[in-house]
Length: 186
Image 1 (cartoon, helix red, strand yellow):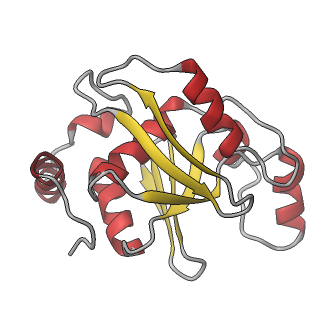
Image 2 (cartoon, one colour; image 1 turned 180 degrees about the horizontal axis):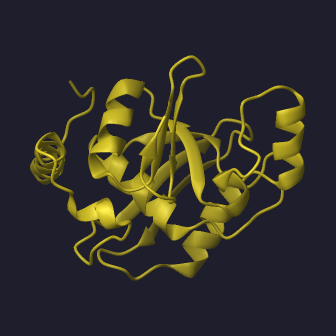
Image 3 (cartoon, helix red, strand yellow; image 1 turned 135 degrees about the horizontal axis):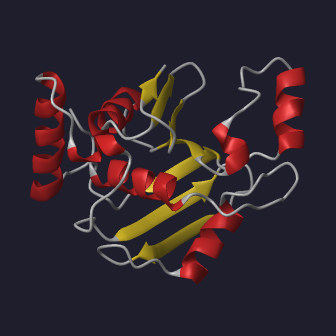
């Protein structure tokens, strides 16, 4: 059960995607592209490492991106270890937005990791953290996050129902990973 109110349209999309997944059909998003009928791209983010907050409308309904808003997102999602930025893949930002919409769309999403510089990724590997050497975080195509008051299992289920990109489930460390790569799960 969701812990946040869900609007009717989001509920119907989530239900349809879940039913399609249950019966083996591929949802609309399974081809790793989004349609022009996308909801408004509005996110409220909190970076747990820098304590920075950002509420931003980065895309109007459809596909018209706001380049200044994307720059603001790139800064908030930067590597917190080096302060380096990268142009985050808009597909992973849209993926996060759609997952958020499953839970009402007005949540403050807590970001654990966005862009990860190659130096920081190597440091994490040396410390024994289980990070991939070819991590999509290094390309700006991955996000690790949680939404307070929404269970990680519900976040994982919502992301999986879209069959869009990678979905990693990390209940021991308290986050869900999504990326704009090929659909896969772990």
